[in-house]
Image (cartoon, rainbow, N blue to C red; front, side, top):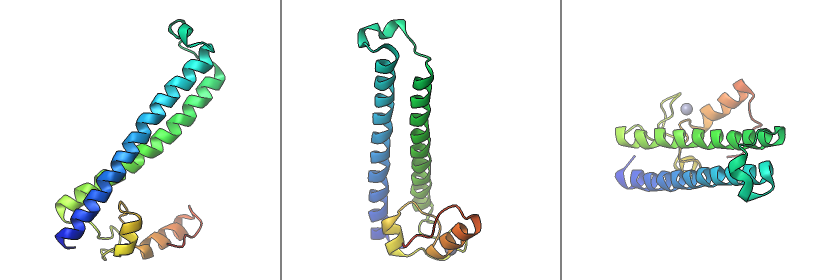
Length: 132
Ligand SMILES: [Zn+2]
């Protein structure tokens, strides 16, 4: 892949990473604020409660689910950024073919070509077929 394309994807990946980091930050802030309100119903009493109610636990675990997913996405983006540095970006990790520009443009942190992605999905049956 030529340098200008790599630069293009690097920019895209960094922007995407930043937006994930932002939502991670927001989620943490929301999670904290919600649990404060829920635990006490009154922000001034927060210091007396480290809230351990069931509903709070539920809310927190939902937040952690989102956070986990965001962290996974960030990890994938970091891998893609590394691949740009090592010159392996845009190569399918499964079959070694180049991944199409349009596919990378849509999912810049993918490491599978469309063909392998389809086979992967069919084999694992994890997702319904996608029209990418
Ligand atoms: Zn492939």
